[in-house]
Every structure is written in structure tokens, then in C-alpha cells.
Image (spheres, rainbow, N blue to C red):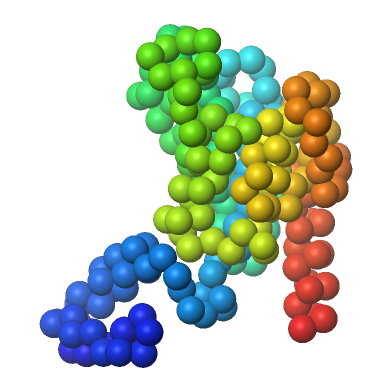
Length: 226
């Protein structure tokens, strides 16, 4: 079977069953995608203090306590076709307070609890490093660096100009700003009180519910203006 190539040519993919796999691989490796309409919109979410209570280092799945509004808020994003992607600093691994396997189980529990509300996270990226602990002390993923966001943009074909970051710390906001995203500060968790970095969000709201409502309202306004 033959299908159109990336820039108007023809690509021979063999049997029709190969099309989805080849299209996915071609999407991921094409550095410049000609049609902006194909770029996806995403909301990058910090985890602790935004989706769940920030009770210090969460070391076990039993410690995960989602905000009661988190599932409904993320479900709204899912329903409107927005990608919901978690980007989280988890230095507990570098501090040897928990393992990668324990982080995996915590994130499995996150998906289970969200599923009960009919919601899902499309991808979870976390940074296990810390500048003062562990063998890796200079990484490109720990916020306010942009490595986790950049990876999500590349793997999902995300339009930075139409995407957002929601966080409760100034490191979240600075990472979002550096990555070219609009930034939203929520007053849950740290609520920006850490003041580690001098950064001003595009908007400040009470919690994840208000953040999502603001994003979707802004999306509707832009659509109506087109």
C-alpha cells in the first residue's frame, strides 16, 4: 500500500496493517512538520501541590492523596482533546528515600485514582536528580530546566505557543517560561511562596479547577476569533 509522504511524495509501506506503526514513527522523527494544524495542545502539570497534596516526599503509593477536584479538572482536559502531561521533580530518589520502582508504583496509583473520576494522564516525566545528592548532580531535566517539557514536546508533537504549564512553585513557572509555554500559578501547595526564582506567571488562580477553566475559556475565545 502507498500513502502520501511527509512533504507530498509517496511512501510505500507494504501491507495496510503497517500504516499506523509507520505513521507514528515518521511523526516522531520528522524535525519540521509542515502543517501547524497537526501540532497538539498540551497542559503540563506539576504533580505535588497541583494534583495531589504536597505532604513532603511521597515515598509510597499509600502516601498519594489527590485533591478532591483533580479528577474532574483533568477529565475536562481529556474531553476537550488536550494532552495532560505530568512533569515532576522527584529528588527523593537521589536522596535514597525511595526507588524508581516505588515512583512507578506511585504513578500507577495516580492513574488508578484518576480513572475512578474518568480521567487520565497521557504521560508522566519525572526528574530523580538533585544538585546536592546522588551520582547525577547536573542534569537537564530538573525544573527550572526544561528537559522534561522538551521531551514531551518532541514525543507528542506539541505546539508550545498553544500550550500551558500549571505549577505551584517558582521553579515550575520558570521552566514553563523558558520552554515557551503560558504559565499558571495555583495557590495550592507552595502557591509560589517558595520565591526561589524571580518569575511572574501569566495568571494566578486558586487551584487546578480554576486553571483548567481558564485554559478552556481562553481556548474558546481564540477559536471564536479565528
